[in-house]
Length: 79
View: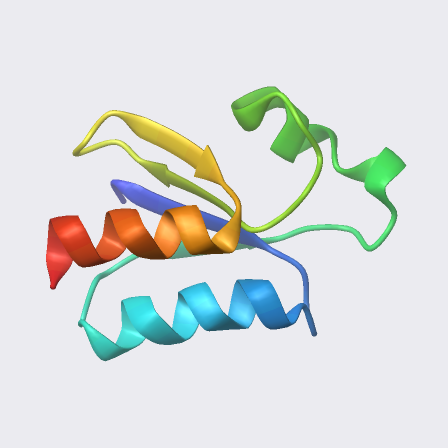
């Protein structure tokens, strides 16, 4: 899949991004991350930091964190 969303179960920022992707019918894979920041090595490998959400969009060649920034990108790219 060309889009991957790294998220934490129960994270309202992650849910906000996932909900908007779903509303727009954008296909993506979810990778659920560990609750402890210190155990989010996979997120760090792709984004350079351990916070979530992180969206990797291979079609557009972007990897980004921060829910508001991701939502702006999603609106520009998919709405």
